[in-house]
Image 1 (tube, rainbow, N blue to C red):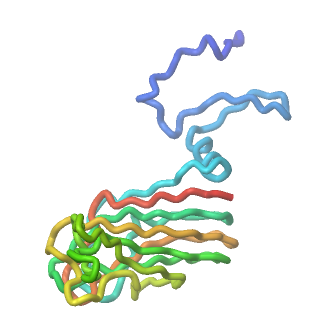
Image 2 (cartoon, helix red, strand yellow):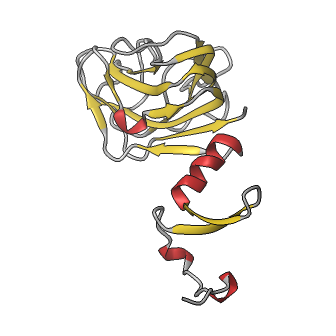
Length: 216
């Protein structure tokens, strides 16, 4: 069969590209044309070119127990390397005095691990930070509350508000961010765990996302 120049191939509509589609590349060192799946191209870029890796929660993670369970949609496998980690979460609580509790775990080995947990505080003056999660925040104060941790947790998550008023309003979407740095020496899974402060319903909402970037 006669050879066909790559420039003569029909153009593929970018809206119809599948991760299993093949691309033609030139292996300069071997002097050969080769095929590669787009999925492999993206994986190479994630590992070597700082292309973000993302996960999204496809269904609410609801719990009415102080014993945490893993939010498996947001579990991500990581090879050895240095990573920045950002969880962008929407949470709810069915009771104002009950906090959603969150925890980070990594089941491989990380030489360095450090995370910060943040939310808008409902305090209304500079002397009245409440440590109460709010869905809007207050312009006159503008507190961002939270804490830092270097401790992994699974069934006993350690990030939340144990104030008298844990959330300002029941059953509303409250934005939470957990950001951090992880230096992995032995590959493993990065995990998010969720429990309720008491045996009352709390939720991590659909669409909550994880963005991880390998920086080295």
